[in-house]
Structure formats: structure tokens, C-alpha cells
Length: 620
Image (tube, rainbow, N blue to C red; front, top):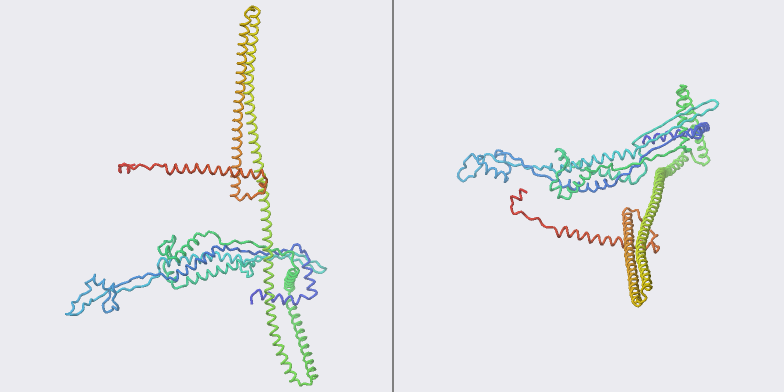
């Protein structure tokens, strides 16, 4: 029976005496109902999450380490010495070779026909030595694994079995004849709590870690490792011998050593789980009030030094109860005698019937005891399930809080994405408006420039025509003066006039032809400039489409762009198609340039000329 069971039984017996007593119940209610808001009870436990990777790696590696230990690699150590021939038990090849090199061991000449017998002979003793480098490496690896697991297992077990309870009450009960002031603080910290938070994953991983520890302990206790432990332990770095590189078991053991030696993490994470039990439940408040009453009674007993009086009252009450029990027993005996007489049987026969009935009742009681044990077992399981339910409820609350936090983060990210997309769209529209404005201004400048040129050409030709008209008027004046002075020369004048008219007409036609040619040249230049501007605008649009496609590709790489249904309209779809075509043209042209550059660097590279003079080459 554990200490908790002893205290529980004692407290339960104490409660039997006081639970239904009216005065005790009144005191408990006065304590529980006073100043309930200041009651505090907070418990703290730790939920440990173990990283399964290092446990799995050690489990997998231990299989190969165990196989390597079973190989029991060894080498034969040879020890030899020269001993008298009388002590020689067995002659080996090494003995013959040594005798052939040391003829001085033969000191007697044999008789005719007798064998040559030396006085001494070299004897070889071959001993098995298990302290090879590979076995010493296995011993060092097992020691590393033992320390590696012990360090983490102790911390994990300490965290899982940690319990911190912080309880405080402050009450003041005032009646007509009694004032009771209670101020109590109880803080308990222990690392041997046998009731950790229910977590099947952590419990199974702890069991697997302990199984690994048992395997390592059993391997260190093998005869091979016991013999190797007597040799000095090797120190890092490990020399990778052929066996460690080629033998599969040793190679995997070396990989396990590298993993353990370079592992820097703790191997686990922990979370502090607090539980606030205030305000107290009815049962908790009632039991705390019971313990407070017991403390107040103890202080009152020793304060008044009335232990002897109370002991006398206790004895008197016990005697009264014993007398009451004896009285009840005598009354039962009387009833039994009355029943025996009424049954027309002797007392002996009635006793036999009672004994038989008792045996039947004992059998029933045994069955009832089994049923009670099963009921107690089921009650324990129910309590365990309730504790697990409470732990899972806490865990569910934590997970719900985490889910709410993640949902808030997702909402923030979605809002950020929408804001970023709107900003990018506004920026794109602004750039497009700037490009259109630049195009319109360029077209307007070209129209103004060519309008000025046409106007200047027209003004120039109008000026020439006005000059010709002035010449014509001057000629007319000369003609009239000539007509007045030389009437007789009218025919010549008319002829000259017709010639001048013809020349004037030719000049006018020439001017008109030149004007039309200038207009055609202007229109051709205007159309050429217009087509160049349109090409420049198309090129700018293609660059914009390429930039937009490149920006979408970067967003897709970063996971910040998802498919959008905004491209279902004809204009947006054509824009998307133009972006794809622009990017495809860029890729094709860039690939051609890259191939040319690669061919130029590889195929057109000239090999270096070798120097004919080796000394000069060495000098260089």
C-alpha cells in the first residue's frame, strides 16, 4: 500500500465521522462560503513532445551494432619462448623454422643411425585477442549511445513527472462567540508524480527509448565488450579502416556514430499546461474546509492542553459503543433462541442450520467480493478515463486556440495578398497610362512637327507664286507701256505675251507638281513615322506583357499567386495570351544567343601552343 492510499483511507475514515454531523457540516459551509473570490488553486504540468527521428535512427542502427558485436572479431597474438626439450608437448611449423635458423640448440652428436635431438626448442603459444580497433570502436559507440540516451531520458522523465500545485485561501469567519481567521498557502513541487498528462505518443516513445537503453546495457554486458573494456578507449576522430568502410554492419554502426556525434538538438520539446481550479468545486471546497477544521482543532487542543480530557471522552465513547455492540449482540442471541424454539429444533440443530447458512452466505460474499473488486477496478478505469478526458479537454482547448490563431493568420495573409494584388494592379495601370500618355505626346509632337513643315512648304510656294504674280504684273505694265509706245509691234508683243503665258503656266504647273511631290513626301514620312511609333508602342506593350508574365512567374515560385478567374473576359484573355507570346519570343531569342555564345566559347577556343623548348617551358 502506497503513501497516497494510506492518506486516502485515513481521510476517508475521518470523513465518515464528520460528514453527516450537523455541527461539522455547519462549520464547513461557513468556511466554504466565506471570501470565495480570493481562493486560488493552480496546477502546472508539462506535456513533452519527443522528436521521433533520433529514436528511430538509434533503433535502426542498433540492429547493425548488435550484428557487429556478434561477429566477435579478433586477431591471434603469438607468444613464443625457447624451453628444454623435455617440456615440449607439441612441435609446430614455427618450431622447425626457428631450429633451422638456430643450429646452436643442437649440442650433441647422435649415434650411428639415431635421430638428431636438440637440447632446447622454440615453442609458440597463440592467444585470441579481442581488442581489435573495430571492437574498441563498438565499445566507444555503445558508451556514447548510453550517455546520449541517459541525458535526454532523464530530462524527459523529469518533465513528464513534474507536478507543481499552488493553493492559497484567505478567510475570516466571525460569529457571536468565535472568530476564525484562516490564511494558508500550499505550494508543492515534485518530480516523481506518477500521474503525468495523458499522451500516448510520448508514452510509446519513452518505452521505445527505454527498450533501446536495455539493448545497449545488454550489449555492454556481453563477454566481448567486457574484454574490450579493459583496453584503453579510442578517441575521436575515428580511423575508417577497411572493415568500417566495407563491412555492412560496421559501416552502418559508423553512420550511427556520425549521427550521434553531430546531433545538436535536445531531441524533445515541452509545453507548460496550467489548470486553474478556482473558484473551487463543491467537493474540493468541502474537503479543504474539513482539513482547515482539523488544523484549527489541533491548534485548539494543544492551546488548551486538553488532550487528556479528550482522550478520556474518547475512551468513554468507545466503551459506550462497545456496550452498545454487546447489547445488540445479546439481543440478536435472544432473537436466535426465540427462533430456534419456534422452529421446534434444538439449539444444536439450529446452530448447524445457521452454520450451513453462513457457509452459503460466505460463498455469496466471496462472489460479492469479486464483483466489488471488479467494480473498484472499473471505478479506477472510470477515474483514469475522466482524467484522460480532462487532459484531452485541455488539449482540445489548446488546439482550438491554435486553430483560431492560424485562421487569423490566414485571414491576415489573404488580406495582405488582396492588398498587394490591388497595389500591383494600380501600379500596372499607372505604368500603362504613362506609356499611353507618352505615346500620345510623341504622336502629337510628330503631327505638330510635320504640320509645321507642310505649312512652311506651303508658305514658301505661296511666296514664290506671289513673286511670279508680281513679275507678271510687271510684265503687263511693260507690255502696256510697250503697246502705247510701239503700237506697231503688237504682233511681237502678243507673241511675247503668249510665250510669257506659256512660261508662266509651265512655272505654275512646275510649282504645283513640286507642291504635290512635297505633300506625297510628307505623307510618306508621316506614315513611316507613324508606323515606327506604332512599332515602338507594340514593342513597349510586348515588354510590359513580358514583365507582367515574369512577375507572375516569380509570384508562382514564391507561392503568392493562385489561378485567377479575372482572365475569363476577352480583353483579359487576349492580354494573358500576349504575355505568353512575349515571354516565348524572349525565351527563343535568348536561347539562340546563348547557343551562339556557348559555341563561340567551346568550339572556337584555340588550343594553347606547346613550347618546343622544355627548359623554357619549365622556366615559364
